[in-house]
Length: 375
Image 1 (tube, rainbow, N blue to C red):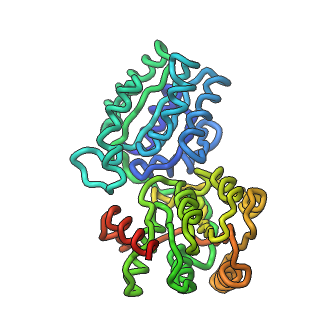
Image 2: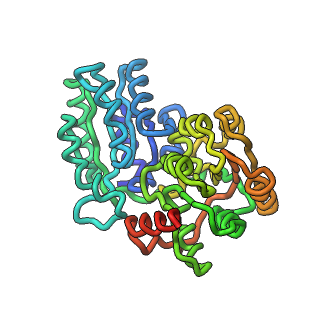
Image 3: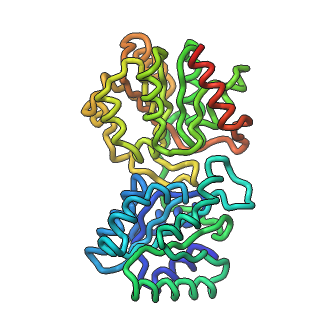
């Protein structure tokens, strides 16, 4: 099906309010929502899946209508709390249509961080007593599924899941969004950062293309990858690094992304409170969830500098080009030299078409990292 057909089906059954966190399984649909966000169709970009469930709950309280919460199935795990303690029929009995991308579907090739959730997603839905259907491949079948879901919501005030498999939705290209262009790509910024290091720094990099690029930069430099590549657990990178910094004397460097940082923004307050001097936080901000298709984040309306300083960070730097980045890195690590510090780097979207993935397993990466940390 194409996105227009999906929207017309949703609209016919009065599903017009959408909120959530993007997933590459249905990135075309995410792009369509961004393109057509307006009067008839409303799309709210949430910081995380828990927030999205709460937003959809508020929508129902205000309108009596049912909101659609989209997410990857890894994010579905995060929603268990608000689903069971807010939307559940034994609590506030709030109907929500959960649109879940099925990463790690059994029998399909996928990344290691998706295998477990892909295997247990259906049992979790059943344990939570959430009925489900699959997004079909044809318009006529989609109409039947929507009719079934609409009847369900008339008789039941509880969540229902619509599971989306890979390659069900036709591609959709946006012509609406104007790109904010900066000098550097993320990979160019990462290369400059790596070149500024002495070699003793501990690096914890965020999920998505950042970790993939860091891995390949290490290989290109003839170095053994010895960083911690956070392949899943979006938003947890800075907290992993905090646990390391509080228990190591090495300089601990976080390579974060705007979508990931926003998802767990409260972590900044914990970092600031415990104030590890060996903690250096680098935010690479391209105003996008690039790994899932380039959907926008809300980073362009956030004052990260004030948030960090208000949370207890010692200093905050910003760089919009390579020269500013070199100066900021020198100040952060040498002139000032004490954290927790934040460096915000503005970059343009985009990555190499031939960007690969780590050739080592997550467990091998962990072992290399721990050995380097202990040495």
